[in-house]
Length: 520
Image (cartoon, rainbow, N blue to C red; front, side, top):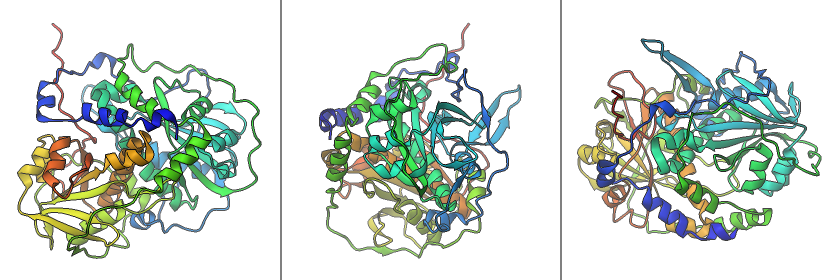
């Protein structure tokens, strides 16, 4: 599966070196240099924009039906209108807020740690009605595509993912991350955020793709260097994370003899950047080198098995079949809640969120790598305490009864929202076992699965009329709190649920930082 990928000490060391603890947070000297905050859009300066249609499919399918993968039958073709809807509902600008003094914030369809939006979107179009074949970059700022390469590039992508069906699917969407956009605030820990954030984008892209009948399939295994070469990105600063093939199969794309090196200039993001070698090291160590490595990696991953003896379960109510709010409306109105009140959720509301978060998706590797643990503070019909969710039974195990608002706030980096929430979902994963099967690339998978599940939590919560907010956490303390049941796992991500106490927004992954001293 690639020599460097098998040396899993790299992922273990990265996870330990970027873990939060009370000591690490209190002794951090990191401050935000606002003079070099990265520009939130990548704009190619030598390529003309191809404006996308301003009328977007409302995605009238009910949100919960879309999350349940009960879409309409597969579409017979992919149109520019379909692609426009996919891009808008996964990465488009959905809201604009102007502040006194003229400051402006553009909010995207999917949440991002620190509202930094490091996830970039590229499109390999083969058979899209109304769009010439080619490789395109999507810029949310002016809602336009820019063509990076003329001609069909699906064949080299199919070779890179070791699956020839990609060359026959109508279009492939690729997500990358620009490291500096996130490391500016979160330093080397940003590597985790790359997959949380691309996961929330994917949660919405997959739901929208299903709603449009485009039968999306996610690919997490691929020859990194080959995909980066097709995209023309500088892998020291930006790299491919995931690919999604969409649309009906047709005649395969013609093979390309050579994929030429291609670097288009783009507007600098900052006057200067700070490099974080630890992030680049873990990413390079999790790369796959050949299509044979990709095939071996997938086969090794299929041998991951669940362990542990079952405990008595608390049956949850059936998930709601409909929310009364369409997928398009939910994404338009989605936002992270700044402050929760203590009004309880119903058991059905919580059950629906848990069910939606754990729906399987069509992907090149199995899901189920991340476990969901909960602190329940205020849910009608469910005793306050700590739980583990069992998706196969749609039930929870009671681990410990009691009131744990203070403990939950502490675990969430001492943020009050973690204690005020009606329930908090903690995503934990057995990293040693995952890395043993998938190598260092398993670290990507664990964070990505939590990100996709977290994105679905957002959608299911807002569809039902309450709020959600992703949070960061004290790594080891989370595992210790849920042990002995969680022994041998590692904390990956956290999402809090509840009814808002006041209007407002916050982005996922908020981390305390020391403000920079104003210049004299």
